[in-house]
Image (cartoon, rainbow, N blue to C red; front, side, top):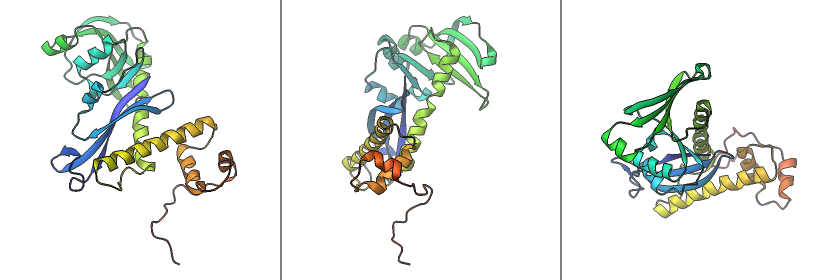
Length: 264
């Protein structure tokens, strides 16, 4: 099961004119496929900010039998149908102007949050042409945040509540983006060329992967950020790596280290 989304990294247009995004703004995007079994990115495609999210689906190497969870920004019926024909499942949100005709409604237990479970077909001219087969439409009310969601999927076997919960797991990729931006250096860049920016992003992602692998292999209880903190102060010490995570006392993680050394 995978979550697919992108994050935008803002840049200064004057210093990064190659990173096209808007008239007065530059940016790059990291289109990411996150494995929800371990919150590990399995595929990343970096582009300038002007590349629309849905275009990244053309570059994605899909895995037969897998589930891909995507936001409604990726709703393109021609591309979704291509995924469907490759025997891949998708779960996404319907757009506001979603035009459809109901063929069948299954009985639902509304106490679970599922309001309706329908088999539908598209009714628009281009919609029917791009996706000529049936779709499953699920309406779900999340009592925690008091919000209603409408999901579209090509899976007709799993229970509606399971598909709704699967889409909720998409939030993991948002947490991944937030963690990368907060704890690794991809807000300020050391170079202004495309190669320099892309290299720094790839280094940050590689660090995340190495720390995640270390945490799993050594069965560490510390958080990823605490592991990073320990490594930063023991990087040049000669010791078995396991010892660094058993003997060291962590510093206050909320304390910021000043760039200028204190003289008094």
